[in-house]
Amino acid sequence: MNTGLKRVAVLGASRGLGRATVNRLIASGGASALFVCSRKKQLLEEIANEPSAHGISIDVFSADFSKAEEQNQVIDRLSQWNPDTIIYCAGGGPHGVFADKEWKDHLWAWNVSFLFPARLIHMFLPDKSVEKMIFVGSAIAESDNNALSASYGSSKAALLSLVRAVQNGLSDVRLFSPGYMNTEMLPPNALPRKQGVLLDPQNVAKVLLAWLDSPKDSDKESWHKTL
Image 1 (cartoon, rainbow, N blue to C red):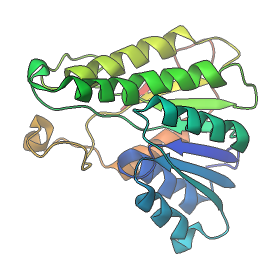
Image 2: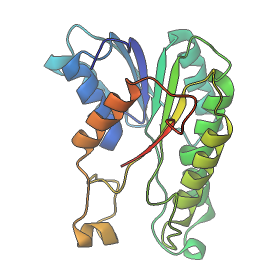
Image 3: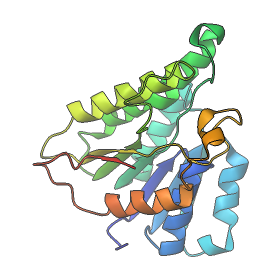
Image 4: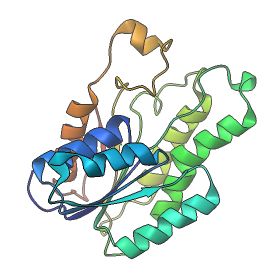
């Protein structure tokens, strides 16, 4: 990894792929400053206090991405912090039959997995100081309708459509869509766990950052990568 990434904001940084991405940025020296944000403040503070993080400026901010007022706070802090790269890893949703789950749980999934990413694109796409924005999709949910993850799947399908729509030669907004990963967010009874076909988040983070570090080719669909 080169040193092209300087001020990197990782949203959804405390667990899963977000935490793995932060770990790799710290270990490789891939960023001179980090803004790490998620709902779980204690896990974020663990990142800042790790011995390997010494020498890197790390700004910790806790927020619930499902709440509009806390989305506003994140946007305000990002505007002040002035990142050149934003990596959005947050997502999720209720597991089970759509009609059996509470409406508030579906709203949570849509807010965190699509509506807040859409707000970030709307806010920062015109801002030329933000050179790159990358959002994490799902190679599975974008192409396969799963009756047990309807709100999550519909969010990821919408995110794919939005990122495709905003592509132009002047912006670098990308969608990185891995398959199922071995994280605590995947329910214990989920079929992928039973099948044993899961990706290692650390390996996925390595691929993500290597791809983000490469130039975007405006003449090809280089804005979308599946894994």
